[in-house]
Length: 78
Image (cartoon, rainbow, N blue to C red; front, side):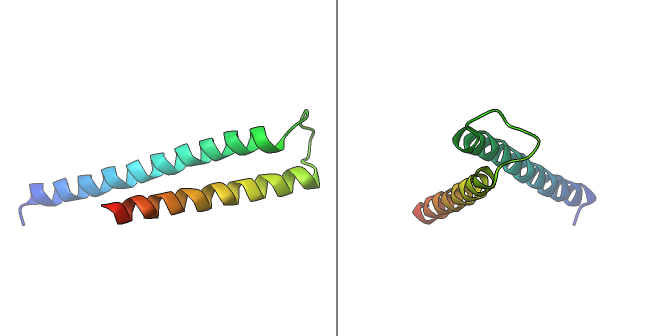
């Protein structure tokens, strides 16, 4: 294999990995914003209350589950 082809393949793999990292980062930001707005109703203190912690955990879990479900459905449609 030509060295330039190897470099091109490595570069393509690098770009794909960076794209995945960016998508994960965007998802974390989205989850944070959505769940914060839903679960933190008052002025936050130095610690979350047990109900806020539980709400944040459940919200993030549901968001991830739904995102994975949507991705799987879209992949199956193709």
